[in-house]
Length: 184
Image (cartoon, rainbow, N blue to C red; front, side, top):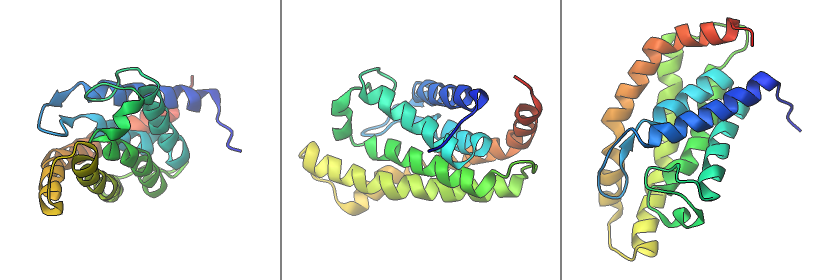
């Protein structure tokens, strides 16, 4: 059983909330909008580590599936049939990967580690999200899309996600240092 301190629980809740807010900072596109969620997913792993970062994203998903409209296009249990749901599932794994690769207690993070960890986490999001997108469109929405076109639709977010990685690499070390040294 995992034990979390009060501070960890507060940060888990904060990152679940920030990911929800990130869903509403968006550019609408067909099937899956571009949002700021990935930025907060990566930040959660960086700041909280693998377990707590992944838990923050699991909390976010459970809140949305419970019916609160925290996803980019709503919420509720039926959202599992939405083409973007695979990307949300990928958030949990990506936060874990980000935390595993970048979070080292008592050690400062550097920009290169943030970039490399973020890129690995992005690969995880896309490896889960794009096949789910393909399946959801073909079998839930009963529309036809080829796997190649599903990759094209899914990868449209990559340039924006690379920019988010750059921003995180720029601000991440200072924010992590401030949060870790803060006493609350």
